[in-house]
Length: 226
Ligand code: NI
Image (cartoon, rainbow, N blue to C red; front, side):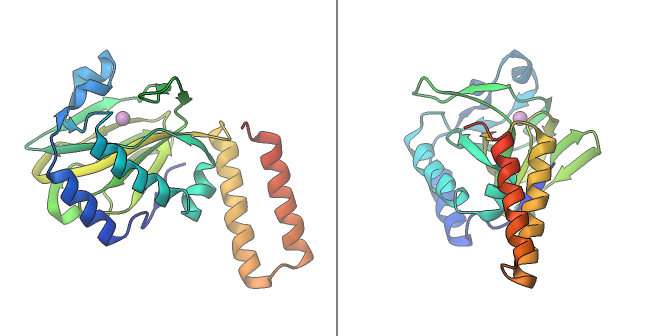
């Protein structure tokens, strides 16, 4: 399931993050990929242990962990510290798949990449090209969102970033291990949770809504690995 998560960051947060990113040094993006990715990747990134990146990443993680739509869809167990990339002057990233397991830099921790996130930090009017193109069993999807919005998609999908032909595309990107490994089970829980919330708004906490909430939690109890 691909999901547009709107307004993860406020306009003020985006402006503040961008001001700090624009004033910092970027390195070749091939620092964080394996040999397949290195052949097709052409962009710049903040170094993985960059203090500025770590600080800005914390702001993003804090915002995500109170975002009801992200929590409902991702059921996150653990998320790597967000990274930052920048494409301009024709830079792009050819078709690739993200590695299945990632180390958390500076620790002995590793996580399985169930979900990939791209958080846009440039507005679509500020650049041409730069669409994130995700290929899944339902076809090919092109994504370009307002600054502050995030796209969540299964890390099992092949994807690419189109060349940026005008302006600069700045994004944060990161991976999440979900409590629920299976995409279909996670999707079912998400839809059930969303329907329960809508029913609760319409009907209040009537016995049926309470019972459905129980079914949600009992399914989560069956499927969650924590
Ligand atoms: Ni990727």
